[in-house]
Amino acid sequence: MACANPISGRHDYGVIKLTTPHMKDIVYPTGFSNSYLSALIIQGSFRGRGGLGRSCASSLLMLLAVALISSGQLEAKTPVEVFRQASQSIVVIKTFDDKGKMLSSGSGVVLDKAGTVVTNYHVIEKAVKLVVVSDKKDYPATPRYVDRIRDVCSISAPGLNVLPVSLANTSKLDIGSTVYAIGFPMAVGLTFSNGIVSSLKEAPGGNYIQFTAPISPGSSGGGLFDEQAQLIGIPTYFVSQGQLLNFALPVEWVVDLPHRHKTQIAAAQVVNKDQEFQKHTLSLKENEDWLSQIHLAEKWTKEFPTSIRAWELLGSAYANNGEFGKAIEAYRQVVGLNPDLAQYWLELGLLYGRTAQSDNQIECYRSAVRINPEYAGTWYRLAVVYRDAAQFGNALQASLEVTRINPANVPALMIVGYSYGKLGQQAKQIEAYLQAIHIDEYSSDAYVCLGVAYGEARREEDEVKSYQQALAVTPDDHAALFNLGHYYLGHGNKEKGMEYYSRLKTLNSKLVSIFFDDLKSRVYPETVARR
Image: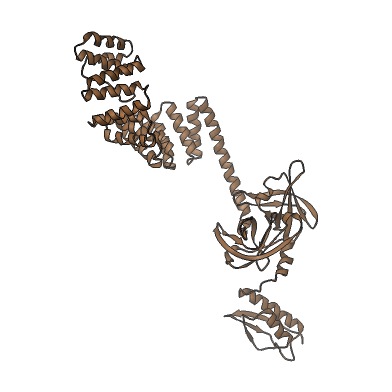
């Protein structure tokens, strides 16, 4: 008996209610399968007046399928069904060099009727020419969208007209879900394997998939499908030594590819402009055209206010032009953008030193050693600033850090000895200078410092010998001549004292001007202490 009126159906609280003009409402639980309800229809369980016609039965089954889909209980396809549907969207991708020699082959998945194919970027990375093969026909192809970071890309193969893939999403995947891998390993023919999802690693927009379905070289760029023959990922690599360590990037990355590509192109354009600024600024620096460098670097920092390199080159240009205040401001921008770059704290410290701001200089060097406490050069600079600021305890600690890192650092040992002397520890002062001489027996500065230390310890004979050893190494050592002249004049030997004074007179007018002020005074080499 034919159905005179449409059949309606609705899903209501876990049941399916079917209604026809000739029947009362028939209610079945949604857990019933299609096959079970088909059997009911065939057996005549759905009956109206005089029975139900074939068209009504078909309508009921269609309605039932819709209801089951809406209830989330659509039956999984069989492996054969998955292969028949999904394999139509899988193609071979061949890559060639500029001489037409084939480089490699991989797999791809067709996304639309326009011939857009998705694959892994590494499949086409070295290609000069691309060909998509489907149904034994070749289709020349060109890259379309590329995401090197995610190792995914799409290519365009005009004329390719095959069934596009259906897309799912990885957010609905569970560990243990059945999956199927389809590809063209070595371009010899389609392979189909099944397995399960063994791990899901959260990734931007989806989940990176580890699965157990076996794959082989050449399967990269193929498809990983769920039980509805929908694409869930692109197999990208496997670990040959591992057991079933196969990985696929999420299908969401395929969907996001056009947007990511455009974003990366825009970012690349910004990078290129930034690099152009850098190229021209460095050229001006090489030519020592400081004013032009300042002008260009200022423009650069306005367009790229977060560019550390721009602020650095602006600061160096200001410094080379003698504008230390502005140079400090520029380097302050650098350390503000990234306070973990020790070299810029060092540069800023040097600029503070040029402007006699020792407190700020110390703070900069302390910031640098906090970042890299094993760099002896920073500790040495800090020791020098502490010494010149008469902070001898801090100078001692900083110079000892230098010798901890490099025990053979003679300049640091000189500061160690000088600091011990200022702190009244003459024995340790002498020990430090002797250690420096042991390392460098040709250091006239070390001999002079040792002579001063012996003098303060009232070891006059050793004092004189140390100055004489300094002159044996460096005959015109200013500090040694000054101190020996004072020693002999102070001990009543005017002839000997004036001899050293006469030698000094032609060498150092500054020391000559203070020579007769205090015959008891001794001077250190300028490398050890400011005068």
